[in-house]
Picture 1 (cartoon, rainbow, N blue to C red):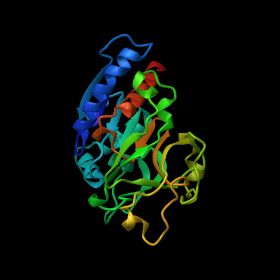
Picture 2 (cartoon, rainbow, N blue to C red):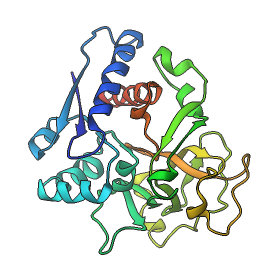
Picture 3 (cartoon, helix red, strand yellow):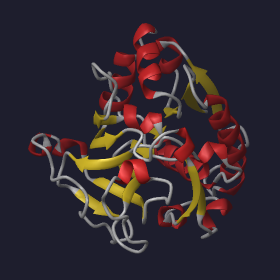
Amino acid sequence: MITVGVLALQGGFSEHLNSLRKAAGHISTASASVSCSDLFHFVEVRTPEQLATCDALVIPGGESTTLSLVAAQSDLLEPLREFVKVAKKPTWGTCAGLILLSEEASATKRGGQELIGGLDVKVHRNHFGRQRESFVTDLDLPFLSQGGNNEVQAQALPFPAVFIRAPVVDQMLTDDVESIDGKLSSEGLSEPGPKAQTQQIKGKIEVLAVLPGRHASNKAAIGDAQPVASKGAGDIVALRQGNVFGTSFHPELTDDIRIHAWWLDQVVAEWCNK
């Protein structure tokens, strides 16, 4: 049995658990290599002892500074770093979770914040402005149709991406980057930072989704700059590096379980390769 944990310190952990349980039904019945219907065990994670039982982990959206502080108070920060960066177990972060899984973050509160790391990127917090600048938009996610073993992934429909005070990637800390659809442009991204030469051991960053134009309500983030053309370069909102997967948006706040099903497929593949 594969134990999948959801960090349950703050934020949308219950929504992730519900989506994972729904997605698991499709994985267990559709995967040709799996016959049992109880392949997964899903748990809330609040202590190092609970984390130690997990084969994979979801870090939900919420408030990244609060999540970091509570994790530190719960003696979870170092075990989380060990889980992600040493044991290299599959880990997915959404919104605030993506921030925590990045090596660096800008626009942090005074004094900065502790991060877990694992993705060689610098993210910009609250890129789209305040809560009132939140929005939902259809997003093309070509990775969902690649390498899956369940019927929900075969659907090529756009994904209803929910952005709430979302971060985006604004700097790569490595030059080993590729785009799944070959359309990645470096326009608007900072050059690789000084860590680039020392971070290669983590592996290539795969850019999995780009928001191809900033939302109309994002005036605070854009300032006097011109919006990105709808078919041109945009903001990186989903990526993967080795065992770490991150999304700027909130799949758990929709009824669409395709991303949860896709990620569980990755977890199964990793588990089977042990």
